Image (cartoon, rainbow, N blue to C red; front, side, top):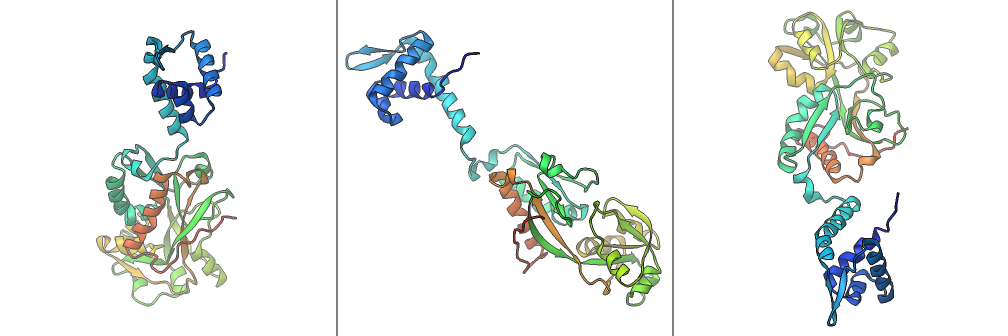
Length: 312
């Protein structure tokens, strides 16, 4: 297979534009002898004189005229391969951003993110996928663009920032005895519970707090999606414990009562993670900026500084 010096095409483009070896040399910041040598190589390669003398100028042959447009297009395409895309190209971006997040996140912030995307990148789409338990390398392998939730990335190269602290709260159906008096650890563990399945290795603040008191709750039903837990609680005597934001968003429509859990010493920190291959991508960077902006607009995480931190 023959190999070619593709720099010769840049020389041909300059020669056709300038109409002289001297003018082409100035455009290319080369010496006149070097440019003349390149023209000789082009003639040998194409089997055509390409440029012939006409007075004090060089004029293109029919073959050179035919090559002018495709050579110019090739140079423009080659430049596009290495030039960084610009922010003002966002409107032309055709892309599906895959965001893995708890379904409560999509409920709380999906509308704001979708509205911003429709304005800035009308040809792009936002696809929320639920947290799965057998896809630990999704960021590294490019199956998702952003990972949002309460977790610690396992791949050391992953970039991560804190988004906001998340409190946990219980919800029960209206008239449930558990809501009649302030919650205590013993009253809490005396109930039956519906729980939300967590990622492998992710700690449970509820169970950790209870274990520190020598207590454990009885979980009867476990669901994969957080939004299913309050629905089940509304139709039963189960207690559902979930993020306060999701609980308060769904409680009115389901007729639920929220019950604070003062025995929980801490909540969780919701984080956003991505692979460094996307760090310099303007479209991805735009989406990363929109996530905390949507959170701030709804009041979550106000006063909580967004600081990058390395994963360990």
